[in-house]
Length: 219
Ligand SMILES: Nc1nc2c(ncn2[C@@H]2O[C@H](COP(=O)(O)OP(=O)(O)O)[C@@H](O)[C@H]2O)c(=O)[nH]1
Ligand SMILES: [Mg+2]
Image (cartoon, rainbow, N blue to C red; front, side, top):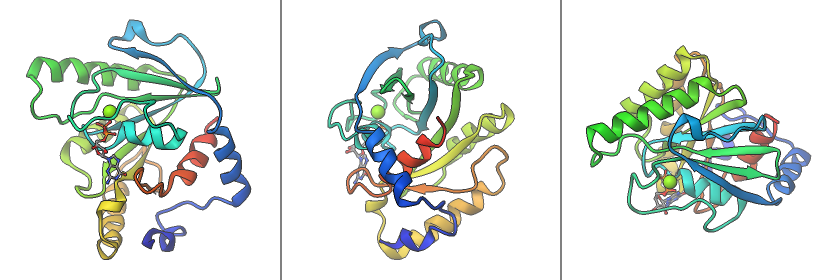
């Protein structure tokens, strides 16, 4: 696939032993901890946390399932906006992964949107053990204005984040190069953004080994 050629450009490099160690780590037990609707409900632990953020339907739940090789761990759905809670998953008591409520869901009411945004904002700003936010971007659509809004908020709160392109299988090879360059351009202007992007397809298992390795670097 085309993105192999980019490993020294916008993509970081991972050696085989590191990829293998991460693969083994993600084979461990992964359990759903809880769904959280307000700040009081946050699990009271100090385990390293990473969060998956992104627009509704970008593929957050699918990515958690693919990373952990479980089919139904995180509920995936064809109905956008169904995930309205912060869903906490615990990987072998070492890494907590948080599936965040999607933003940009057109059919939601203003009140709902306001409540989710407040929860997302409070969580992202106030969580000490949160080591990185993985900002999922649909490869077909690229970075949208509401993605930029979240990135701006992360920049201003100094929460580090990294972009993960999803559904790369939906973009024909000749257009992938353009997607990578455009994404890289947008990100180069952002302060708290990790310099490398990650490219994945949960459907084809592309980029999962690398993303697991990147997550394990944070523990
Ligand atoms: N082709 C393709 N479809 C995907 C991929 N990841 C997710 N999807 C589909 O996109 C839709 C939304 O996925 P979901 O994980 O529920 O998104 P979420 O709202 O961000 O949690 C579902 O129909 C998935 O099957 C992928 O890598 N490739
Ligand atoms: Mg979901």
